[in-house]
Amino acid sequence: MGAGFEGRRALVTGAASGIGEACARALAERGAIVVIADLDGAAAERVAVDIGGESWHVDLTDTGALATLALDVDILVNNAGIQVVSPIEQFDTAAFHRILTLMLEAPFLLIRAALPHMYEQGFGRIVNISSVHGLRASEFKSAYVAAKHGLEGLSKVAALEGAPHGVTSNCVNPGYVRTPLVEKQIADQARLHGIPESQVVSDVMLVNSAIKRLAEPAEVASLVCWLAGEDASLVTGASYTMDGGWSAR
Image 1 (tube, rainbow, N blue to C red):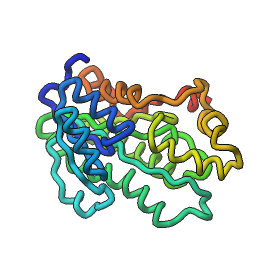
Image 2 (cartoon, rainbow, N blue to C red):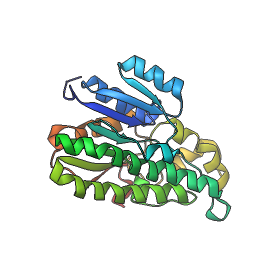
Image 3 (cartoon, helix red, strand yellow):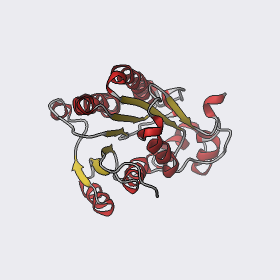
Image 4 (spheres, rainbow, N blue to C red):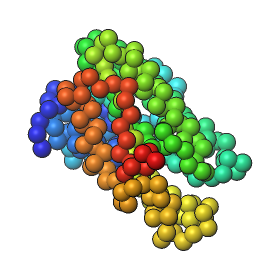
C-alpha cells in the first residue's frame, strides 16, 4: 500500500476489532503510528504489536479521566460503539446512558483533548464513524440513533471551529458492516421482528439498501484514509454515506 501518513500519529478508538481495526491497519500501512484504543486491552495490544503501533487500554465511559486528557495526535478516528436493540418503553435506562456516554460524550472529550495540538501545528483530521443511523432512524434503536445524530452535529461544530486552524472534521456513514457489533444484533432483531435469524440480514438489515450486501470493514477504512489525507483538505463538515443506497430513498 502506498505511503502518505509518515510522521503522523493517529488514534483510533474501538480499534481491537471490526471497523476500528481495519482503520488502524490501513492508516499504519500508509505510514502512520497508530494508537489502538480499546476496552479489551489484550486484543488492543495484539493489534498494536501486529502493526507496529501502540495500545491504550481505556474505558471511554470513564469521562472523568478523559476530561483532563491531552492528546498529541494528528488524526483522530472516533469509532468505538455498542448497540442495544429494544423498544423505547422497555429500553434499559442505564444502557441508554452508557451508549450516549460512549458514542457522543467520549468523542467530544477526545476532540477537546486533541484540538490544542492540532491547532498548534496547523493540521488535524477528525473522522467520526457515524452511521446511516446518523441520518435515518430505525425502530428499536433509540439510544444508538440519538447518539449518532448527536455525533453528526458535534462533527459539524468541530469542522466550523477547526477550519481556521487547518483542522477538518467529517463523518463516515456506513450501513450494516460485517463486524461483531452487527453479528450480535441478529438474535435480538429476529426476536423483535418475529422472524428466523437466517432472515434478519435480508429482511431487516438490507431491506432499505439498493445493494444487497453488507459492507466490509476495509471499505470503510479506505474512505477514512482518504478523509485523513491531504487530498481531502477542503472536505469538512461533511457526512459520507457508504450505505448501499439506503439514504437515497
